[in-house]
Image (cartoon, each protein chain N blue to C red):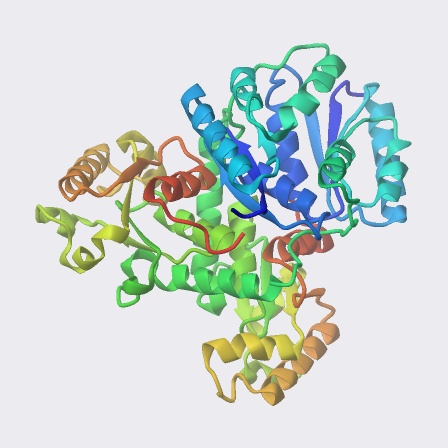
Length: 274
Length: 274
């Protein structure tokens, strides 16, 4: 028997949103050690009953009341979950009534949000953007730079690739990236190939020690991963970006989501889908 | 002057979560035409005041009360937003007090959720998974299949690549994919290269007409994009997967998030990060 309390994040869809809410709420109670369990696609009475069973078991095994943070459109499924011994916080319970009063009309109880009339178009835009990011990764191709919404610059392993893919998947943006290598650093100005696209350029930089740690994982004890080399590259690239007035972000302490949203905000780029 | 009401999704972080909450709530009121605006990184008093100004302008211009759906940790910033003329629904307002009572301890008001002690480790896992997905995309490489958490199969343009990248970015999973091409379809059984990894295989299928539409965008009027070819490939691949007892999902009406989470649930794969 463990005394660890369980928090269940329950959704009739993917569970991604309610999980994010749960994480941000529980992050406010750092002294509590809470086991976190996501149960997605609880969209039938049968699945709700199974979830209640699981919640009841957690309550019994831990001797503490579970927390249930949920996002369930169907009021019957919400009601089925409410018989569990958990403390239940449901987004629809909390916000639908106030919104209905404000709008002066009842909710329509449509499960899922992404399947509106433009579902196929949104899907296509995201897929096209993903393939654009793959094709234009790591300076592999530059002839499509004129079609890019943004072109990320930075030293190898500064976070360009995942940021580009995230921009594509989440926002449908066409993001290319170009690694600044030692050859580029021999010259004092921006690589020639980038000059026509100056207005689309955005830099990522990173603290040399963090870069070293990332590169050591990839090629341990190489010159590439040495602190001298990392310091040299970062210093030179930052200088290059300053000279060319290219805006840049320091990626060291940012998640991929933060990098993507902060650079969109700084560069003034609007999403294409979402 | 337009009568369109505005909903603001306001966050002290990326805004992704509160935007998702807002979308799912407003999807319940399809008859309402609501302009949606996300304001991320409202994390100072000054930014909150600017947001209030923007909300006030929207109220004046439309002649309707704006909706404000927010996720703001700092009570002072919440209070600053509350002077706006909007109807305000804040996740922390709603849930922190009940949680604090339940835990018997006050919240710690830490802004942001992703920067715990394991931030660098989580970041590294996601980045490694992204590079794994890139390297093992489209059957480009198969010698790392033994390191994969999952290997997706399907015809060209059935959604394998974005799903693999999403699994990597969101869950840190190592997802490879292998396209079933016409050559593979000449034989009746699973391509030889895949046989040692049978337990990791998961298929995507798609309705032939939807596949045709996607392929037409890529290569209009080609045999590749013809309905005959699409029907042939889909039928053969589904038969192959059935014969080999490989589980599969129909991607036609699913978003990338849904594909990823449903296949994890069906294949019984746990996330590595998140």
